[in-house]
Length: 120
Image (cartoon, rainbow, N blue to C red):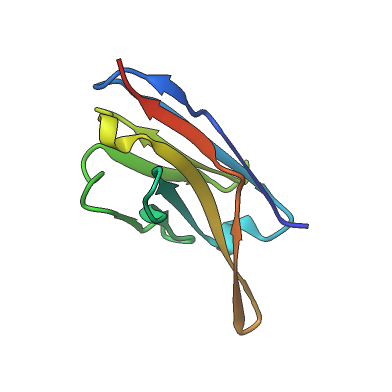
């Protein structure tokens, strides 16, 4: 079955960096669009970044553009989110999402999330 396992979250000071990883299994990773979302307490889940395959086209929310970088390694079935210049408002649970196409139908799968806390 489809599994998405995030890792790399933690506590970091403002201005610091973290790299999140999401290891995928159970579907054809190399042809699936992968995304990172986040959800802060009391707020709706929001899209952070997306990467396509093939082509590795990327898209970012305005709030993280220039600070975060999404990338993927199809040989390792893993998508990454490099987060630099972190701010307290980046504090959230970060989720990995896979958009998988089976014939003409798309399915969205989610990981369990990893907590990122930006604070002194």
